[in-house]
Amino acid sequence: AQKITQTQPGMFVQEKEAVTLDCTYDTSDPSYGLFWYKQPSSGEMIFLIYQGSYDQQNATEGRYSLNFQKARKSANLVISASQLGDSAMYFCAMRAILYGGSQGNLIFGKGTKLSVKP
Amino acid sequence: DSGVTQTPKHLITATGQRVTLRCSPRSGDLSVYWYQQSLDQGLQFLIQYYNGEERAKGNILERFSAQQFPDLHSELNLSSLELGDSALYFCASSVGGELFFGEGSRLTVL
Image (cartoon, rainbow over all chains, first blue to last red; front, side, top):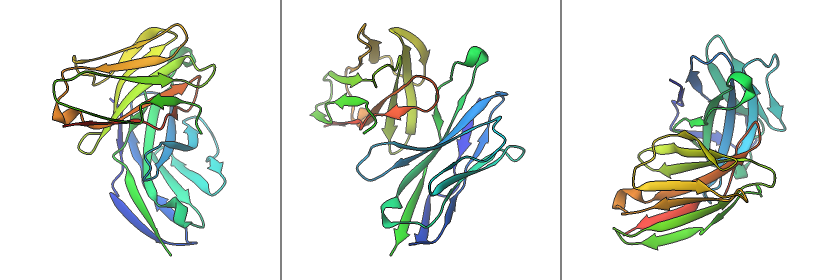
């Protein structure tokens, strides 16, 4: 069975500093994808970044980067130069990539609430 | 804007009632997923449809049902509502990789 663990219920970071949000996962699937989503207080789920299990390089999207350590089964999100608008819940998620390329369901962690201080 | 449209955005109803949540996926996306987000359970996968057919089932109660129509829009029907069904219900669509989520339908059962 798949499982996503986010051990930090809440985090504080000073504006303009970098912050790392932790995510570990467990799966028996040989191929899978890892995702991070942002959920601001308004409620919508915003896709941030994706990492495939066979990708050689860590994914980056603007100020977001994913620190993927396959052997440790971790997929931490790094946000550089934090902004006040980064205050939100952040969810790590995973889905299996099945035989034939079809995708399994997205399984979410419990989330980390990030608060950016001015 | 993710391109996924959900209606209604907010819904308040009473226990025992029935409601229907509607989702229009992004243009071209064949897969539709329904998720429930509550404070105690987090984000729970309910059900997936692919091109009109049920593809996978998660923690969906028997009181809940869904379908995807030929135009690919989907509806989630919740019946015999209980207080514990109060939650944010998300629809998401995908054609391959990441899921794109709608803004959610916030259901309050009183």
